[in-house]
Image (cartoon, helix red, strand yellow):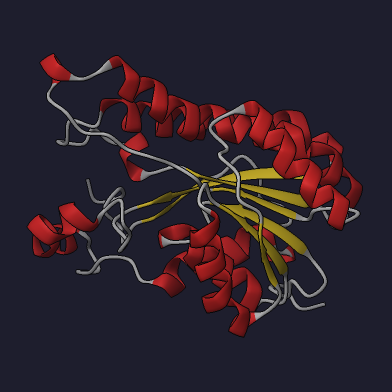
Length: 255
């Protein structure tokens, strides 16, 4: 068996219509998986399917995963199409920046709901489908998308973003300990700077400076994220669970 081969596997990627989510979806498709992507807007899903279809079988199911009801509905709709799910990527996320004295309460709620609560409720909603695929030799895989801003102190006033991403890292460890005996591995990727809508404004203002903060002298490329996700989704990482993998060109290590 090829270590990185995902042929015949079923994967779900939330926030899979753009940015890091689309990078991951494309990588999983190229490795042979059938992929379900989800985002709030149906039009965005249709556009992503049109772009990704050249890489494999991809389906869009719109859902606002900031609510538990929508997490349950997404799992139910995937379950109506598939007997099991091998890979769940909890990628959907949001950020918000504002000065400390002005930071609005509704911004905290929005970011916490999507960044921290959604990965928990999605994992729980998909757990029956994940357990249906997982065996001791072929475990199912949950991949949470954290951030190096959950590992370090960022100079940006994005307080709930950093806090929720640190929470995602710890939630990953907790779920890994609980779900390992149920043949489900749980790991997290902590991305550094990648080209995405979330990072666009920051990269436009400080792109060269950010690139130079990496020991590799650049920001992340789509293949960098795809490779990390395929590793954690595949047999190549069969003995890896509870890990937080920085994919940041060495920014975290060289801090």
